[in-house]
Image 1 (cartoon, rainbow, N blue to C red):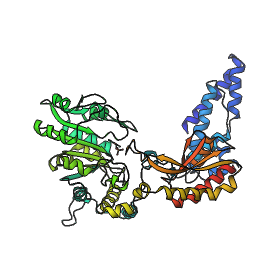
Image 2: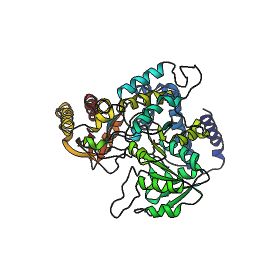
Image 3: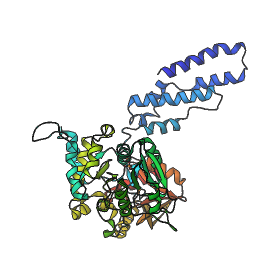
Image 4: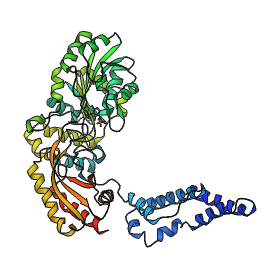
Amino acid sequence: MKKQRSSAQVVKRSSERTPTGHSITGPLDHLATLRSLPSVDKLLESEALKPVLGCVHRRMAVRTIRAYLDELRQKIQAGETAAYAQDELVRRLERERKPTLTRAINGLGVILHTGLGRAPLARVAQEALADASEHFSSLEIDLETGRRGSRYRHIEPLLCELTGAEAAMVVNNNCAATLLILSGLAKGKEAIVSRGQLIEIGGAFRIPDVMMQSGCKMVEVGTTNRTHLRDYKNAVTPETALLLRVHTSNYKITGFTKEVSLEELVALARESHVLVVDDLGSGALVDLSKYGLPKEPLVQDSVKAGADVICFSGDKLIAASQAGIIVGKKKHIDLLKKHPLTRALRCGKLTYAVLERTLELFLDEERVVKEHALFQLLLKTPAQMQSEARGLLRRVQADLKDKVEFAVKPALSEIGGGSLATESLESRVVAIRPKTMHVDELARRMRLNRPPVFGRVEKGVYVLDFRTLRRDEIPVIAAALLVAFQQ
Ligand SMILES: *Cc1c(COP(=O)(O)O)cnc(C)c1O
C-alpha cells in the first residue's frame, strides 16, 4: 500500500516541476501515460474482471492489481513503453485463484514428478492422514507410562522388519538425511566418494555441496567412468570417517565403466575401521523386476551387504509422504537421533501417519502391489492404457474433428524422481495436433483448467500419457479439451 502512495506522490511533484525546464515531450508523455492507468478501486469494480475476481480472495486481488500497476508505473517512469492490458491482469489474477495448491491431472507420463508432488498415496494412507488431521494424536506419548515417548516408534519396528536393519529413523527428506548422516558421522573428518557418483538431483541437491555443508572433507576418488577398489584403498587415511556410496539415480554411465560393489566397499571399510554410508535415492522395498519392470536397488540388499547407514526417500518408490528414511546399525542411528540437527529436520504427525500406514502395506507384498496407487500406475498394461486413450477420443473426437488431428500412439514414459533413470516403461498416449491455435497455447489452457491438466508438448503435438492418467479422470480431461477449443 505504501509503495503505491509514494510512487503517486513522486508523479505529482514531477508534474509541478515539468513546465519549468525539463524536455517537454518525454516527461509529459510519461505523465499522460501514468494518468491513463486505471485505479485499483476502478479495476476492483470493473465488469470485465468480475468473473476472475470472483475466484480470487479480495486481499490477494488488491495485492496483485497493485503490484501490476506499480510495475507499469516503474516502467513508464523509466521511459519504457508500457500500458495497462486487461489480458495480462486477468492472467495474473488467474494465477492467484484460490486455492493455489489443488489436485492436478498428470498426463506427463512421469509417475514420480517432483513438480506434481510425486506419487499419489495409498488409500489407507489417505485415511490415516484424514484421521490424524482431524484429531489429536499419539505422536510422541508412551501409552504405557503416559510420559513423553519417541515418535520413531511408529515406523522403526516396521522399517527394521522390512529391511532387516537394526534401527531406523525419519527426517524431512532424503537430502536432509544425507546432510544429517554426514554431519553426525563425518564432521571434521574425511568422507571418500567416487567421482562417478558426485550427482546433482533436481532442485540443486548436489553431493559436493551437501558434503561441504555437513562440515566433512570430501575426498574424491577414481574418474567419472571408472573407480577401482584400490582408489578407495589408497585414499583411506587416519582422518577418514566413512566411504559414501551414492546411487546414480538419474543417469547412467555406460561403455567403459567400473564401479566398486557395496560388498567390496564394506570389506575395505571393516579392514580400515571406517563406515560405509549408502545413499540409495529411491529405496525400493519390492523387487520391481519380478513384475517385468526395470530393477532398482533394494534397501534389503544394502542392509545385507553390510552398509552401516543407509538413506532413501519416503516419497519415491515407497510413495508415502515426503521424508528421508535412515536405517542401519543401532550404534550409529542412536547417535544421529541425538544430533542437534535432528530436531531441526524432524517430521510432524501427518508424515508419520502416512508413513506408518504405507510401510504396513509393504509387509504384505501381494497387498501393496494390489492396493498402492503407485503400483496401480506402474503395472498398467498397454491394453488398459489403449482402452483409456480410446475412451478419451470417443468423448471429444466428434466435437473437435475440425480443430484437431488426433492419434492414439505407443510411447515410452519414465518413472521419474530419479528412479530407474534410464529405463522407460511402455505406454499409450493421445497425441493432439491443434489446427486452430499454437500447441503451447493449448498446453497453457489445459494448465489453467480446474483441476489443471498437464501434458507433454512434442514437436507441435500435445501429448497426454496414460501411464499416469486414471480412468476416472477421462471425463474431466475431455471437458477441459472442449473448453480449451471453445475459447
Ligand atoms: C532423490 C535423491 C535424493 C534427494 O531425495 P529427496 O527426498 O528428494 O530429498 C538424494 N539422493 C539420491 C541418490 C536421490 O536419488
